[in-house]
Image (cartoon, rainbow, N blue to C red; front, side):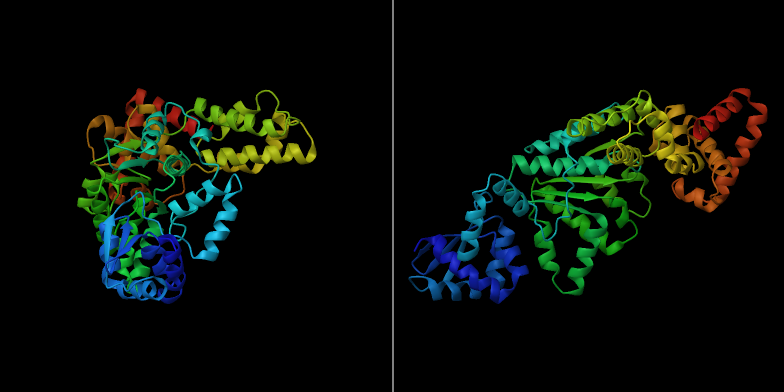
Length: 464
């Protein structure tokens, strides 16, 4: 029998005796390379895995090898070999895998699944690729940085930190990085999950006394991607584990990609040492979309749809109308377009401007009626050419403080939010600070003609 035959038979029994969870995490990454002089030699992906297996499963492994092997095994030895460590499947499963691999699409899918740790990795949306990401001025730096990370190899910055409001493309880029990196490095382990899932896994490990398993799983990946990291703010134990996981991966030269709704320094409740670590890499702000970028997204989606459904006709001015009227969230914009496609396909009607207004009446009313604090902050930041992060940050210089007060004033005027609610959206400021800002602008609009015109223009833009 070959080494693979012997190890395959041993693995079939090991999976039963130690459980699928332990087998997948610790035994599956190993490859038996030799049996000689009472020693079983293995290729292992990391020193951590080698040490853990030797401490916890050496007896089980030797027992199974002695059952099926040609000679008595008295000890195990491991050689770290990241590219080669991979356990064969039990014989029956191996044959099934070999049969399935004959299909042209099976091998990449199987490799991606194995590389992605299916027991941990959150599902990736197949639509979120670089090919489907429309690049414009607000997101060109984020796109370039994401493409560079996806290539693999030395990047020059770690972590890559993407931040911005809802529907600006953070999650799309995260998924695109994972898809592209896996296609280039099919044997690499890419772990993508939300910060909430990270916390859930950590709490589960504490509850089940498997914290060392947790540490091993998260610290042996090639790329760790955590979405919405602001979720762990204020959660001390989770932050502690995240900090040590972060350090362990960076020390090993493994890439980390993080996303959040604001810059690290602006996440209240996040430990300073974590803010400092996150700030050591490249921080990229995905700015609010421009009219041109929204129109480009619509045109791209429409072209892709019409390739499959050439009978669908889009009237003049429809895409321009949507790009103008739905300006706060790309997801809502794409959802509106999908509804029009469905309407046109099912009813076999041309999508004219009148049809669009009728079909999307509820979305357009909602978009008109509800002005959010995020909308106000973005619009004011655009108007005064300041960073959105400064709107909620600590800066007090006049060129930032005055626009911030205008945004507070408009938030009180155009939304139903209470002063404490508004304060929370402005970096956790006290309601008295919001009240002072509102009163200050109230006074200035009667004295400063230029400022009064700015406030009136911003109101019109927000209500348009």
